[in-house]
Length: 475
Image (cartoon, rainbow, N blue to C red; front, side, top):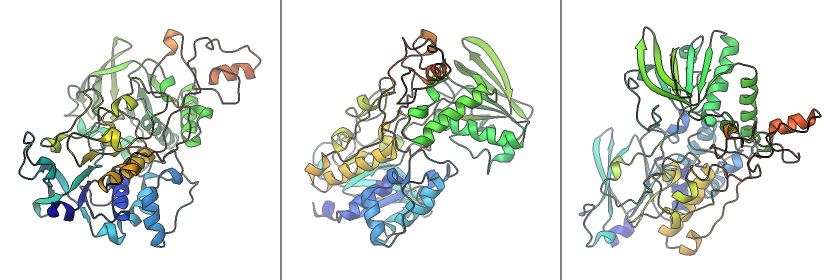
């Protein structure tokens, strides 16, 4: 037991949530050991460093981290500002990682390859909960091994983007065409400009990452008019991706949806709905895409493809740990019903902590975007609440661990087709402004022009739903 008491708590990942966990541990007098596979804190954020997040700084800084930084003489950014991923690293994560209590316990370039209990495989029971964790990791010096009293897995999902196939698998030819396919949010108007300027580009995905890429390509299009943009959605309606519009209390996100809507109206985006790729083939210097569009065969020749279809957790190094996951969402069973995108596309995902995050392996938790499994709704501020609760539990403060200390802004964002225009229940253009007696944006526009409405009010879904998004660590 002395060995356990003197061992650190291992934190996997030095992103916003991992470093927040480390800050909470330091605040409670517990030594963290942070293992980050990248060469800097926030390495994943730097890969989308050009993207501006939807929420102001106040939602992107953890309370314990802020307390440590303030004591160091840190100059805080304007809490009303909207940072980019790169600015979050530069102005927040890098100073946090440099603090004495964290820097001395941060190992960069350290990729975790396995976790187990000392002397126990997955099936062994006797003495299991008293045995320290063994974390194996690989760094520049080769294979390493360290003991820990508890493990907080905040490794995220950025390294495992979903493939193109609607069935969850890569489509035929996807691997061979990898050199012309980007996943996530490439800097198409900046560092990667030469790969996209004047090219025919297919964007696949229906979320805010896809909107970011499409609008950045439009920016590029202004300077390189030969750039053609094809935007493919798996579902049959464009309404789902337009955001809450004027009803969204995070203005940057609402503006993003409205900008995409205007671009469609202007004909600058070639929209492809109910789109499913069957095969990709290299063709000269480009790609031949064989697909189905609204159930009918469809082919398209492009130069580049950008895939923004979400991410999934890497469970490969947890084979000897007793982990319980929902079979569909791949989140802890108590959390999964709260975030399942089949049921929670619009609505409130409540703040949650150790009660919902606990696994059958005592002392082991998954936090951050990885805790949400395949659900796309993770919020940075929610991750901070998670680690506050988890660290309180590790410290034995079970009352604090079960408290809820998070309030997020109300938004009007829907992220799934609960009802679509095709079945007469679509919300045309997103929810109407909160102070307007209208069903949706198009209904409000029609009434503003003297008409009785746009005709969809009888079937329009509720536009007063709440969602709890502040900032996603995966953009």
